[in-house]
Image (cartoon, helix red, strand yellow):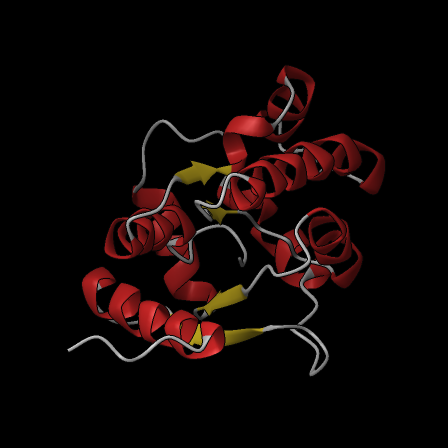
Length: 167
């Protein structure tokens, strides 16, 4: 989880591969209306996000029920958004990726084919609510190589799950 440009999708894909479980990008769950709104530089509001978060939560629930587990790259900026996901998948573990604003702008400017314009970054930074002590999760800086971040994420997840450390 985190704001745009933190590397959520890259890290989540690598993490899913390391853990041998399915991956999804929550961006793929947005309605065409949400994508059009963001593409136009208009931030989503809570009414836009509700059905989207419900769909992401359902996907997590289905994979938990199937016994596969799953990794999803999702902004989940506010506690109430994470509560929606947690209602569908109570054992969800949130990993908040962080980076400085200038680094985020640079990353967002370099990427191609994504509908999220850098002009919406500040609205995401304003909306971001840090993980609370009562939330199952961890924070990782997204300032090193993706493989390093993914390995650190896998170690945090294994520890949270009570699994032995990989060698």
